[in-house]
Amino acid sequence: MSATPPPLATNQDLSPENGLSALRAEVDRLDDALHELLMQRAAVVERVAAVKGGGLALRPGREAQIIRRLLARHSGRLPQQSIVRIWRELLAATCAMQGNFVLAVCEPGEAFAFTQLAREHFGALTPLRQHPSPAQAIAEVSAGSASLAILPPPEEAAQGAGAWWQALLHRDNPRMYIIARLPFWLNRPEGAPRVTAFVVAAAAPDPSGDDRSMLGLEVPSELSRARVNAAFQAAGFSVGQILLCRPSSEALARLLVDVEGHVTSDDPRLAALARELGPAVVLGGYAVPIRAESP
View (cartoon, helix red, strand yellow):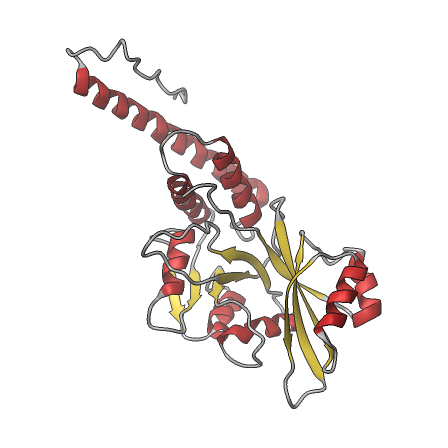
């Protein structure tokens, strides 16, 4: 099978005699060429799965690299968001090819915004189960009956849907990690879900080249945000959001800090941070979401 698309018709080819029928034939030829390339891509994905030998098919960092690269080379009137949508469906399909791929979505409200966001990112027909609490969604991933948990954003509250991140500090078996943040495409057209979600899996995140990481600690309850920020900067981290949960009945507070870059457990900066605040747990990370340069 040939993967080379046929040449486009030129203005000279589009005489009144062939006109619209010639253009439609050109579209048909291009559709066939695209389909052939898709089949060849699927065959390569099968070979990748065989080389990997199992494990989670999803690689959010690699997927982010693909979409960023395509958008960087994109031109013409086809909207950027169409490129994102086409490749998100394609990536979801190739994940499904590599094994049973099921989503567990925490849907705490009645608007189904998190379900819509999961469908947007992971494909319209990807199997999906809804749960009223993050714990139930994470339990599905832990048991192996779901591949990913899609959860509300972390909050400082000691309880509630946004407190799920505190459980990740315990390093249960299997170990759970934050691996993505949604939406990856930040331009929100009318009718699109406006919520933010985090994706949790029983596998560590992979780097995309433009990432942020989430570090968790248990620290003395009286510790101030200023002291936390100073300790992280002294250790060499560029700090973003800081969440500090102080349960009233406990001596220790729980800390979640968003930092620049892809951080792994062997990062030497963690040793410097431990001398100031105590040991930090790498809870995961995510590829930095993207926004179109123009609407």
